[in-house]
Length: 375
Length: 164
Image 1 (cartoon, rainbow over the protein chains, first blue to last red):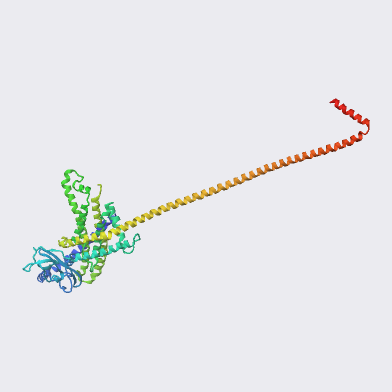
Image 2: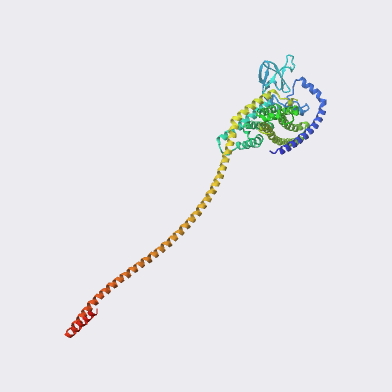
């Protein structure tokens, strides 16, 4: 396994990210200095009109007088949403599912009219505050104490479903191709997918897990393709792509949690001995055992943060570069932006694969450490 | 901070979707795909092994053929040699036999000739004795015409007898 190349590319990437971040921050400071005087009246207007801003585009014709706020725009794109913005003022409303003490609430997010109106549900009245569904109390104010769990099909969930659909279509058709052409050379989509599957098997699973690799292949392959397809769809700027699915901590949390479960369920006696009876003098146990126990958590935690940070950073960079056009309010900067975005997108294509690869590789490595027979 | 706080809804849907995806793909995609790839790899391995075996077999057969050819050639030479010696021996035998036969014939002819010669000699002797008797008779007749001569003769004969 050529890890050195991976490391070098990561260093390069970090350098780029930091350079651009510093550039972005220096611009941001300037912008904020200009905005500061205008902020107070704008803020009061926003508060009064109760979330008048659609938020999807900070610099649309309607809100042309408002100062462009790149941080807000970018964070809105990075974060989850109850609407799927298509183009201009057109958004796809998504279903809102709420678990309240009274029962389940189910309605379309179109009822909020981009947060401009409250919706009176069966059990409560709801209001959309910064893309979060909140309960409105009897006094017309948001009731923060109300215990409502939001199980809505948000933009990320919908985008994830799209990715899953694509994955299912692709792989079931490939599988049927194998059934149809038994023993023959792969053809078409099959010959595109097969080397990747063989790569996951021969370069990720086999060297790291050993002869017990076959049992973990379904999980590794599913993780790899799930992350990769979501990463790629996240790079597509138009519907149904563009959602920051793998750059969402909830998704990476679930993936890393899955890895943690798989690793610890399959841990053999050597693995547990290494944790509870490490080969150190007994008086070091008070230090070593907590360290090893933290290690159980920290490994998947690192997986979670790595994927989340890499993908989110990619999205932020691309959006920052696009924002430059609106910050400078001139088309002259557009070629520079587009050139940089093009460069970043190509880099992100690599990162999309690399992150899926690293996640799968490390999962395989952790599983390998847990099922290893001898130390 | 909101960015790094997992929302319950997304966690729920991701878990559900990912587990469903894992189960579906495992049943409908990974099993047939990995199985087919494994099978094909095995069949390719097998084919390569078989090809290697066939190659070895071919080499073996070729060397065997060559051996056989050589053997056949040696055998042919052997046979030719044998035939030659056989021919020579037959010739010699025939020659010898012919000689023996010839010798026998010559012997026979010699014996025949001897016999014929003996017979002829006997006949000649016979004829000679007959002729000499006749001659003697005639001589005697002529000589014994007078008495004196007869007495002389008898005396002569008696003399011979007395001598004996």
